[in-house]
Length: 269
Ligand code: URA
Image 1: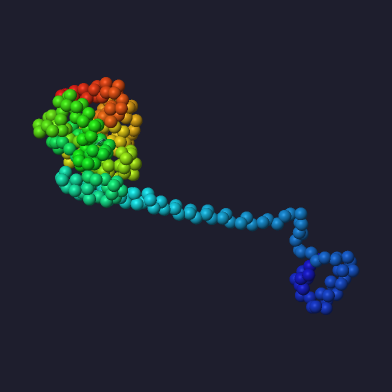
Image 2: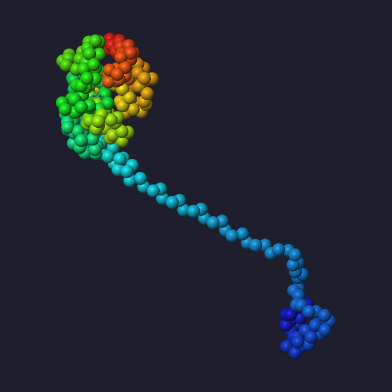
């Protein structure tokens, strides 16, 4: 039944509609119905809520220490790239204030030997004696280094480029207590070292110990790397055990001798 005041198209006045309603109630119609049957067992379809938008990605927390270290490396790169001569590079590297080691060291230790040399040796960092004199490899390890290279006819004092050596270190300032250079220190000095090699343009590099292998090859494990020719800064490079290690481990001198002979053969060839 319908509660529509029009009944099947006929308009009803209020009185008639009420009479009809009472009549229907007497017949037992006790609830109003719609024209179309209503199935009450069918659950009304619930509209699915729209999918929640993905949570906005939280901005990565800024690592200020890393940003600062990257800025320093970028500054070192700019200063090194601007240097047009070894003197200019030495001045730029000495002026670079990003490296804390500078504050504790006595002297800047840039190089020794003959820049016209065919062989450029790259060591780790100045020790006590190097820090005192401002020249690389002048302590006990340096004396052994001189003897080793002398044995194949090479010397840092040689004027003749064929027989000469040129020597530098990854770090130009002494780390306190001769501790190992830290990765951030190596990263800051690397642009200067790369430019140093570019300006000297040697024929061959010797990487003395782990630290120059980390800097130039991004590899470590000198006892595995030693004696195997590789490439560093675009040049042939020979990793060798550090003379300080040879002083502590005399048996390793046999391998070092083999490495020196390999270097001499390469120069002769
Ligand atoms: N060890 C190095 O690697 N370099 C030096 O100058 C002295 C010791």
